[in-house]
Length: 434
Image (cartoon, rainbow, N blue to C red; front, top):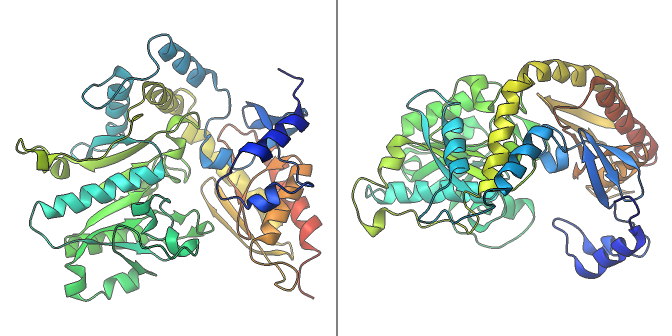
């Protein structure tokens, strides 16, 4: 379809929809024109008026191989000819079985060997927290508390939000899991022995905190956290929702420091950006606590209607196969260096505070004048201006995220960075303090 009723679609959106993490007063204002995206191929998206844009944040960090990838399209169509969805409660299906086996085979033997499916990163974290809590309860342990790091964001369902989102979004609600916030490994090491004995698990985004503003961990942080957990007898949960499937240059961020967590959460890029699906991986030792005898108490009482969805699992299995078929990580290493080179000029711009890069993840923090704009206003204005230069992305307050699909060409990558630089110069010069 090429003749879209853009005005009608925008009016209907404003009349009927409620968008997440969106100031709806501004969205519904008469002068605001929402971008209606209707088509995508590779790293390019097209709107209802025929304008093309580079997908600069992989459609909220999910689309790793590009839009309309023939391999994933074929896998979904093939599964559609069989069945779209069957219950995973009391039944199973081949795509889920095959995907679980393929994921487990990515890790060394006798490490992460069990797969629990859910819907997204937040619910994947929720699963991990419940597993950890139940794991310790059955052992008669008083370990009920969790540790998360300052500025952490692990999702916005109730349990996941207890690890940091409530404070991040200035929400005073009391959430389900009691959590301790630490700023660093130094603070972790300084916890009194009595307090450490109450900890069920430490949750961390390895290498980089995403929603915190692309904040990079000092080298060795993850290994130090693993060491502390081992000494304190605490479980380590790695949130690889953002970093998993190549974003940092390795298949998983934990590989950079040779760390194996007790649980790992995967989502976002899992299906190549096609369908919602998440995985909570855990060890056989933890799993064995849930099946060592037959009784209701051994059941993990968690699951959703679309758990183990066959279409999503087929897409995810195809996405994994693309890594081998297209030598994705080898090609990505070159693009990571290209991105680093292109961002060098952005680093020198007077409006830029810092450029932070971890693999194929980049965050450009811009300098705003509080007298002219509150926190986040400049970042939003720059992303809006970037549209006029053919780039789509979304800010985290005043940090502009650049995280394109892996299939982006070198020339498109250069174009994306130049578009960002042009938008920063265009908007930022009005708000930089004298």
